Length: 457
Image (cartoon, rainbow, N blue to C red):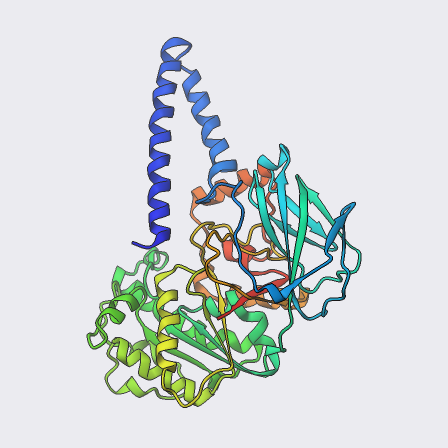
C-alpha cells in the first residue's frame, strides 16, 4: 500500500468515527429537545463539511513545510520591512527564486483561503495555516517587491534562494507522460516553446471508462474506445503546440499494470478492463514502428526496449518525467524508474533530468488557489533529500493555449459527478473559491498557472 493510500485509509477511518459520534449526538438532541432539530443540524453540518472540511489535507495546517536547499543558493541580507522585500544583492531575472517565510492565518483565514499577494500574483495556502511556507518569486521584479497577506500575516525573518539555469527551451526536450494529458498538465508551456520537443506516452489509459458505458457500450468496449481516444490525444494534441507528429509516440501499455510488469519483467500483463494482451491496437497512430511491434506483448522488458529505441532516436538533452518523491501515482513512479533503467548503459545520456508532480501524497488540492495564479512550493515534510526547483513562467497567452490543449483531452471533458458540482457551488458561495474559466475538471484550475514547476533530478 502506498503512503497516499495509507493516508486516505486513515482519513476515511477518522471520518467514519466522527460520523458515528455525530449521529449519536443528533439522536440525543432529538430525544432531549425536538424531533426536527437533528434534521436541521444534520443539514447544516453537511453544508459546513462540503464548504470547509472536504479537502483531502493529510497534515495539520500548523506544520512547517520542510525543504533542504543547497547552502550556496541562499542569498544573505534579505529582509521584510513594512511588507516590502529588500535585498542587498541583485538576482538574475531568469533564475528560479523561492522565499521561505512563516504564514499565520487570521480568523477569517479559517473560512476563506489565505493567500499572499505579490505584485500581480497571488499564492494561496491551507485554511488555518500557521507555519513556514515557500513562495515562488520566479519571474517577478524583486526590487522593492511588496508582499501583502490576505486573511493571513507574514511573520519572522524571510530566507531567499535563487538558482540560475540555462534556457531549456533552446534544447532538445523529451517529456515522458505515463498517461495522455500528463505531458500537457506538467509541461505544455515548456514543450510548446522548446525548439525540438518530443512527447512519449507510456500507457493508453484505458481503465475507468464509466463515461463511455453511459453511451451504451459494455465495460470492455468502453475501455477499448477510451484507450483509442487517449492514444489519439497523445499524438494529436501536441500538434496544437507545434510538435510534429513524427515526434510523438504512444507505447500503448496498460494502465495500472506497470508495477506488475516491473516485478516480473518477462511476463505479459493484460489490461484490467479492455481484455487485451496486445498493446498494438493502441499504437495505430504512431508515426514510426517500435521494436516490440513484432509481438505487442505488455512486458517490462518490451517497455525498456521501446524506451531505448525512442531515446536513441530523439537523443534528448533534457528529459522531463514524474518526480519519484513528490508524485506517488504508481504508474508515474514506474514511468520514472523505467526511463532511468532504459538509460543504463545507453550510448546517449541527457544532460538534464527534470521531475514534475501532477499528484501529491498530502494535498489533493495543490497547487492551491485560482487558475492563472502562481504556484507556491508543495507541502513537504521530509528534508533528508536536497531539492532544487526550476520554475518556468508562462504568459497569459501561453496559459490560454495550455487550457485549450487540456480541453482537447478526452479524459478531462466529462462533467464532474453531481455531488462534486454541489460541493464546488457551496465552496464558491460560502468559502469564496473562484471557478476556473477554462473548464469544470479540477486540473483546469490546478495546471493552468503562471508557472510550471519542475525539480532537478
